[in-house]
Image 1: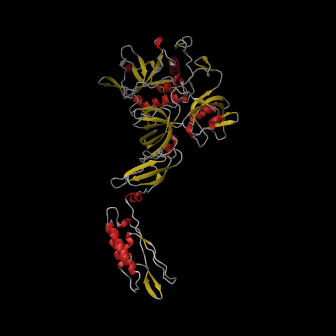
Image 2: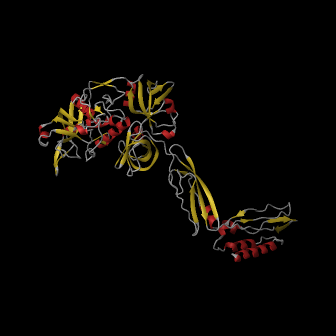
Image 3: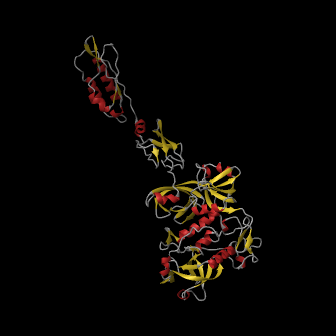
Length: 591
């Protein structure tokens, strides 16, 4: 270092002496002296040197002189100091140059640059520095951009996030801040539009509430329909969480290859009481309430555009047009009536709400199976609830229902007609079977156990449970009224259970209907049973409807019943159960 500085002083002395001479030819000693400074030292090199040329103004008659900053690429073009004219004679002007030396910390900071300050993905914060220099990043807005460069995109609007880099070599500390814009998640599509505006394999963003968590995935609900999402890590997700998810559009009603999910907030969980709020309070809610379900009381009114609203006093809550068509029909049937209705808060910018299906008319009396029931005090299955489950494929009627296996007969998916004999309870029924089926059923056990469902117990007396009798009455009524009944085996499960009972999907066609309904689905959909015994039934892709397996449909039925607070998922008690004595009320139960 001392040798270098002495060289510069030596050449500057020569320059000052040369500047006093008169000459008609350019002097080259200037460029030679500068080129001698190209010798690199431990901490400095020519690239770190800024050269500033200055001059003295000896005469107003001088020609314009070259005053500028030269970098290392310009050095070979420097031919000498500037010239000026005085008394008709060319003269060299006195000059000096200043060396600005940048050490390793300055150089490292100057080399840090980010091509894109608008972020949708994680940012690389690696810094190339000499050994012995400590590197530290700090974040001003770590919830969206942390000190490791991990980006968590906000849900509704872009946010500013600043990262500060600190370099420390033990003798000095330098800092530099970088401000980024973290882009909000793209606007989530309504599930109903996903398959109309996108094709399989497209990356899409969806926003919904978790209604079911199962091994390998979840079911999201956006207020109108459900979406099946394949996610490996579901440990942190529970029913009621609201998620924004980016993934690849799979087959009908499914999202796969999920690359990112953000837990937006949490709505009500199982067992929580749904809060009843006034309509004006509901309209004043903000984004923090997204995904929550609220109960309101008001009169159903039909608006001019075919949509509906709930009115109370001077306040009206519009019901979102995304509400399923079948539920709009239900609203239409209650126009002018005072109702208790649940709304799912899904849109904080447009004050509209998604009706989630739990509408109850506040009328004094109703009738069910010949019994007068106060609808405001007891749960009454809605026999007019529009069917939203799978449909039967009649091609299975020509297939044999069973085949020999290693451990007895296995189901094939084949279907056959039967007639109703008698009920045992909500999940077990006796039918009149074709001869070849009877010959395969174990000795004297002619009952049929329904796939993938379990209803509350009705026997023995000390094990009777609420909604067991109601489930039995519900199933018996539908089977007794049905015009046609079909039993279908399952290609993923046994033909008979361990007790020798027939296992079946039970399809019924009611008077006036063209299509069959799945009774297994209906029982669970009304909250009179839950999904149980998933030993293989409904898991194959051989029996599907609308791209969904029967297992998926059964899970969906339970989710819908839970959302609608039907049966055992709601607060209204079972009309047939004596809660004081913990048993079915024999005086009411028509068994």
